[in-house]
Length: 177
Image (cartoon, rainbow, N blue to C red; front, top):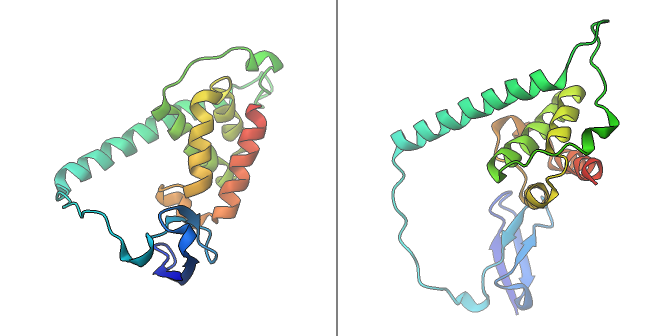
């Protein structure tokens, strides 16, 4: 028997074997990770969702964007210390030894900003962000793994193909080793 459903991302019709019911898998068309429904319509108890307060959501989005902009400015300031000749200096090799612990929310924003910087071609900024994440693999690696599986929700990254985002994330993982 097979389970028939639609991908929640690309809306393509998909057929899966019963053995995959109740598991997470990737769409063969777009690569989006999704939950495959249980076979035979075996449904769990439906939960009623609360309404989203649009004013609270707008305020939350505004605060998130302000935080993102502030962190972006801070990272830009760190990215390009000017030398006497006006060129950005390379980060010293011993930068990997100086570790500053970061919280998961800051790490998630830094990873997202790294991918944005790479997509814009701002390599100095991306390098500074990667250096900021050094030594925090226990916090950063699960964030990168999640992003590799599900992508990002940032509007600026909607235009960057998922395969390109994943390439940037793999490069970041390589740098952090």
